[in-house]
Amino acid sequence: MTRPELATAAADAFARVHGGEPTGLWSSPGRVNLIGEHTDYNDGFVFPFAIDRHTVVAARLRDDRLVRVSSGLRDGVEEIVIDDLAPDALDGWSAYALGVIWAAGELGGDLSSVRGVDLHVESDVPLGAGLSSSAALEGAVAVAIDELWQLGLDRRTLARIGRLAENEAVGAPTGIMDQSAVLLGQRDSGVLLDCRSLEATVVPLAFEAQGLAVLVIDTRV
Image (cartoon, rainbow, N blue to C red; front, side, top):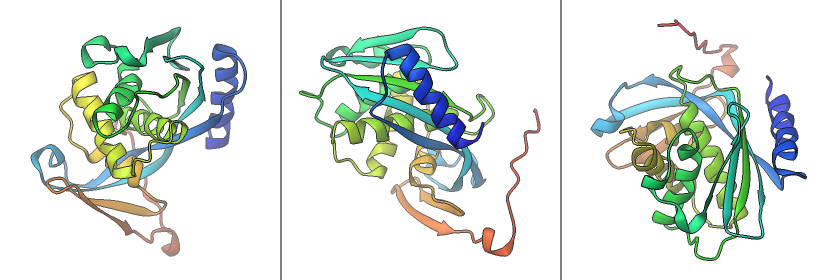
């Protein structure tokens, strides 16, 4: 699906599952790494860039402290009270989304008085294809709750939140490359990331000006 179609699908599915329209839609892309493999969790340098596949989250605040999350790729709705969020209370696909909310509270977000939220996820980032579908989900949820709850967190902090969620709530020992790429990436640019200092620089690639494109090919290996 194209991005507008994905946004429409997210809004329509939210209405079906949660009732009524969402407050808004938030999006985060998948990513490919151009240079540097397995160096992010070894404190090295990486140079990823965002791609034209996205995860979209439709969200709306509630009047209680409940978080409800659904997905176009799964049946049913997962729900938990914000005060009960903890890594050992989460499992399955929803741990990526709910883990972000828990991690936000661990890394500077004041969740003591925020209202609950309904979330619905739609994505055209292929799963299990090395394109960071998990980071795209974490990024979309992170920017959604940051805006809805007015947490005032910058993109680098949101990347750290996504990594903490994946490490502790999901249990995947990843570095911070994926989350940095999807939250800092810009059109026709790469993100040069020093994974030791977490210093990140957006570097223009200028492919479009030269009439070039990068092809990302699924080798099916």
